[in-house]
Image (cartoon, rainbow, N blue to C red; front, side):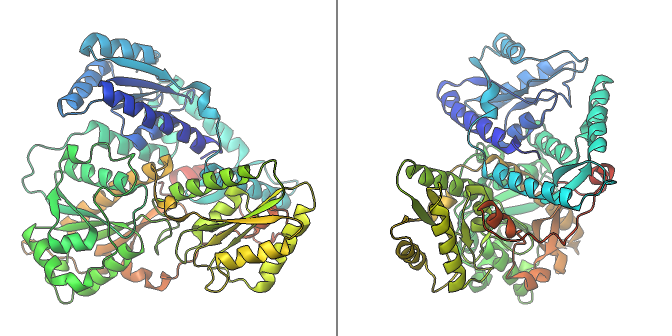
Length: 598
């Protein structure tokens, strides 16, 4: 990922979401052309994040008969009841012979062959503008710090490097190796070696493409003879991106020939039998919708094992995909414990983290990026409200329970002066130092201050206490205001990152599930009683890993390893930066082919 890419995706998705409304009203086909020159990343991720009917990217040119395939796909979609078609075109799209495919070419084809009312929208430089997303703000901060660290640690013999992001980790790569790979991609495409060009784009790009092809181009088999039955449910509090994960899980399951059931209202619905079968169209259009279409509750399964076991037998459930937060993880632990009493619970299950806080086994969860963007947008507006007025400090309370992820990450993203979190205990002396810092800062040309507080960071130093402290100490220098953001952080449409992340997590979880069910087939039935048959699928640094829920018990008080000095340096504190932890220069070849991608 490079700085600016996520913000461009935000602009594109906002426009696609807006166009969807008018397209459905008039039963139209829209052809959207996005930027990227000879790289199809923006077009590909947009298609995956929205669920487009077709995408044209330079790295994978269309076959000679692509016109026939496209028209058949569009007509099939309309036949199934869809009122719109969305086609995404990268500006450098070509066919197998290297001939450009333009948005106007596609429009003329659709109008001529199908007679559909078709419109073209060329997004242009609007994709480069606008307010940066939370991801880009944090990425810019991290890359800036990593670049300075690289300079401080450098010697006359150190080769020039590029600071990059691999998975969830900042890395340094030799500049000349990066330049060479860029040249290799261009040469491969000029030589029409498109498979090689795709590989050179990296594992993440290839993973996006494979998932997109499955969801957009493969249709489920008509016969489900010999298939397995997998149930999908949401547990805990709603998080943006849950619906995208359900959408991906259901459709990948159907493509594999499985029977897929959806459970309403979490474990409570599983106990009450609120279960129905989901077809291909059942989850249509869910990718961009916020909240939880299936409903979600915090109820845990232990008290309802008998009813849950009975319904597992009644509906012949052979695997369970649980999408949710801490309650989803805790429910998984209870299911593992319940296997001792109820054989019906001996089925594979996987937990996909979706929460504004976190669960053990994952560095971040579906929904966190959307919540961060909500916080940043709100903080921007709050700070802007003080523009042109006297000096003012805002105290903002964020959600997350005891997890300080949102407050910590929103700190550098929103330009906060301080962030109070449960994981980093603070005292009245820390509060005093922060107040004195803002007093001195406000005596200069600075007119606004921002303090973030995680909702459960301290039982006694409440939001009201901190507000009153700043109000009293700032008398005559600045005044204070407080805002509790509340449940608005859980709402709204999911960001492109959350849509894309949820889609890939759902696909990976269902692929694991199909394999695990086959492994667990014993004596004519499914029987899974090993620790690795109940897992959390989580992002750990650079890879998505399946980790047994029982092995994560020791991480119940999971603490994010966020570089704390970054926030205070950017807020102009007079502190020293610890540079004792030295990073190593990696080689790009090992990065591309030796690691699991997302």
